[in-house]
Structure formats: C-alpha cells, structure tokens
Amino acid sequence: MKESIKKYVKVGLINFMAYPSTMQGEGPILETVKKTLMDDYFDCIELTHIKDSEVRKQVKRMIEVSKISAAYGAQPNLLSTGRNINDINEERRKEAVEFLKSRIDEAIEIGAEGFAFLSGKYEEKTKEEAYQALVKSINELCEYARNKSSIKVALEVFDFDVDKKSLIGPVAITKRLAEEVCPNNSNFGLMVDLSHLPLLRETARESLYPIKDYIIHAHIGNAVSKFPSLEAYGDTHPRFGFPNSDNDVEELTEFLKVLFEIGYLNDKKRKIISFEVKPWKDEDPDLVIANAKRTLNLAWANLKV
Image 1 (cartoon, rainbow, N blue to C red):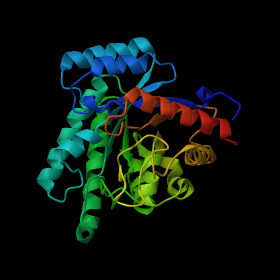
Image 2: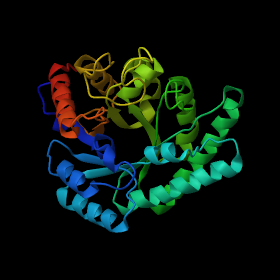
Image 3: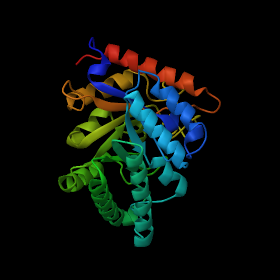
Image 4: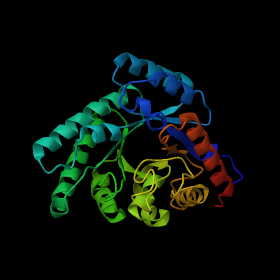
C-alpha cells in the first residue's frame, strides 16, 4: 500500500496489555499513558479500570490535550473477578451486569468513545440458556450506555475451548448474536482480534466475512496455538514472531486485506485497529511495542488492495 496508513487507520495501543503492571488499576498509569500519548504513531489509547479517581481525572485531561481517541476495555475486570454476564444463575448474572455498568460510567468519565467486554464461560448442556442470558445482559448494558452517552458497546470475540473458553466464540454463534442484538441496539457491535483467530481455528476470511456488517473495532496481535506444551500457549498475546507462534507479517497482511474487502477499512472514515501485545516474562514493554510497529509497517507495505 503506497498511501499512508493514517488515511485509513487509527492505530491504537492497548496500554494495560503492553504495560501489564497497570492492568489491575494501579502502578505507573500516568507514566505509561503519557508515553503512549506522546507517540504520534498512535491515534487511540485503550485503557481499563483506574482505581484512583484523581488519576482518572489526570488521564482524561491528558487524553484531551493530546488529541487522541480513547477506548475502555473491561475484559481484565471480568476475568480477574470471575464475573460472567451469561451466568445462568440470575443473581450472579445481574451482579455481573451491574459491575459492568459501573465500568461504563468510568469509561464515560475518562472520555472513552468505546467500551468493550467479553462473554463468559459456559457448559455445553446449558449453552442455549447461557446464550439467552448473554442476550439479556447485552440489551441491558446497551440501554444503560445509550441513556448515559454516545459511547459504543463492543463484545470481543474470544476462543471457546482453549484459554478463556468464552461463549462468543465461533463465527456461527457470533453471527447469530449480532443479528439478534444489533437491530435493537444501534450502539452495539463486535470487536474482532487477529490474536484469537488461531485459537478459534478460523481464517480471517472465515471469521470476518459472516459478521462484516457488525464489526466496530479490531485488535491485532499474536498467539501460540499448536501444542499446549509450547511456551506462551493460549491467549497470552506474545510479540509478533514469537517462537512457534501463529501470527507475523504474512498473517497480519492477510487480516488487513480482509478488513479492506469487507469495508471495515476504507477512505471515508478512519477505523481503529489496536495492538494487543504483551511482554513475555522479562521482555521490555517498549521493545515489544517497537516490534508491533515494525510488523504493522511491513504488513502495510506488503498490502495490495
């Protein structure tokens, strides 16, 4: 692709993943946020729960000053607490929904344009009950968000039988959900992630085309899926080119190509594509981020659309 990526993409960084010491809402949040905001490679920063209200105020002001978009990911909050919005126990489902409503409030507080979450674990014998619980929860979350602001609500597609073992999920049930929920919720859509495709055992074309009309956010990263004995196996988001991993320049190029084919990427409105990369063990976060930039630059240079 000869044209600048800036014409088509708002390149983002999931800050709490790149700097995992901040993932629990504490640590060097201001320092790492400032580092990302000062890097003009990025046009979007993705954040999660920040415990200190004063820190949240400072982060909001930094975002405003730096002329960058912001999004909020509640996935770590659900995973670390074990909450499940498709729990078939109604009381636990309600508790999870109320928890996410408090995170929507926080996302709005820092000026985020989008709010993301994931579906929970399920049992095969009660899968349909879990699905109906999920639909109910999403409708409630979308209504709550719609009454508060113009923030978009996105459900991220995860693996169903490897690591997170989420209901959503394989492309068939993902499409079913979007077709059922989106007509009644104009503020809802799907988040897709290159990292999760190997874990779902789906190609970019298989995974994205059936849900092309519902995608509102995209992540790019890597995974190790071949054997459980391999280092960084599962949904660990290692750097591109990690030993025995699935995604590098070639796979990212194909992912971008499909995003163009389905119309997610176009020259009418720039769309967000964020790096979801995490240092493995003692790797330096800044070097992992540099790796991601170089990989995207090469993929973009190789792209023919």
